[in-house]
Image 1: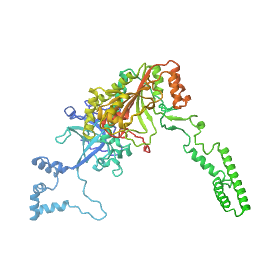
Image 2 (image 1 turned 90 degrees about the horizontal axis):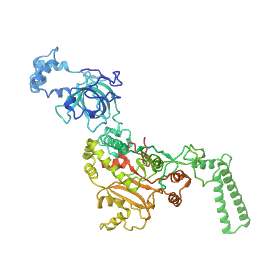
Image 3 (image 1 turned 180 degrees about the vertical axis):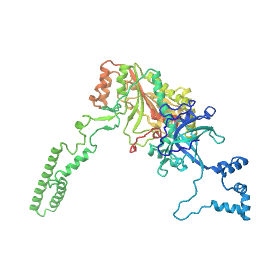
Image 4 (image 1 turned 90 degrees about the vertical axis):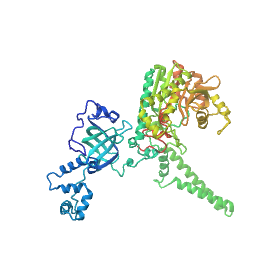
Length: 634
């Protein structure tokens, strides 16, 4: 076995020869741990290179390890270890049999006393000990993020100092031979032969040095948290759902279209949006500061003049009440008038210099990167619709942004959405597609993430697999908005508002009760009042609009969709009714003027889908780098 050690950056090439029976990754020549575990019969004896991060470690002294050997083997090893030294058979017995050693010590065995003296070490102040470091073996649990399980790696202290490889989070690239383990929960282990790289950690400052860190605490360390088993498992499930999304739409002949993140339109018509600008966001504060300093440089302060006006007004009021000196009153009134005139002149001059008034708090976009106000998009469906009118069925998968200062566990400032638009498609077609897509994702997770879902079942949610299976095997209940209200009215145990007036919008409390208590399953509600939905949704003959939502218990809305209004006069009236800026939607109205088509689509909140599959409570725990009000650490 080689004893070459490299604890910094090894000069030994990383691309060492690996077994052809265990194929390495194409671009790093290391083997993923998931390809080794569970294949003990076929991989034992193979030489491989693995890399990963230490989850836990245990050091065992070699003397303790050798105690498991038979007595004869131990004696032979002792003889070999002392070969070539001045050692007697009595000394060997003394070292192996404590009772004999104690008896000889009591009766003054001269040979043993002499041996003790020879082996003793004298330590003086300010002198390092002469004892050599103890020989030991370190057992490491190594994870590379490819699976839930870890690989046990055995490192002899002659290869690397235990203090350098045992800290949680240490990175290790090691080559060795796979062997079968005789005990413990691991079928195989890697006996290290060459250490190619050691990436040490500062144990006192490394946040994952502590055990069982709460998920909400981990959010403060987004750059480290994927090294935990829980977050790594969630990210693999998220990746699988992302792949399943593209697979589903590719299978059904949809074309992937990337919609813009920067937009001039509010796709919903009533959203709180992030403004995009290269100008100083404190423009108004700077203007105020300039107003305060312009005349200070000239020896005159507007604030001082205003204070003088207030003081002289009090003097005038006092003189008017007393009526003791009319000449003094007349002089005070005249003085107040002059001071007011001075204040007005100062304000007028400042307005001319700054080109604005005190009340004007709008940002001038003429000098901005875009000469008009732009925003981060909250939805790409309007832009996607223009491509559906040319390509047929299209979808987009990307981040969307919404200003929301609430601390809701179901919302974040940046969330990923799967958006779909289908030409020549009506509301029922959209609901069917959304239902099939939802079931497809549930089935994909169960079939392709079995180990991850088993971990979720044990550590997070014991009902996760049953919940997904129930959706796959069943059919989603569909009911109109009116039918949903009637179902709530008939409920005897009413713990919610029951005054359902025309145009009433169902609250999250109502929806939760419908999905959890009444139907106990995901439901689809459609044909909403127009007040509850965006301006572009098609209006029905009964006054409702052709929109739907898919709700799941304990989570709420996962999918929202609609049939879009193709009639120019109807959508124009709706824009005017809501007071939207028509010029910003002229490009969208052009689709109705030129080659209009009946179309529908929907939006799946991808982060909530991951949350639903895993049973977690907070959406921030399934987003790689969550952004929410006041939180954007890296």
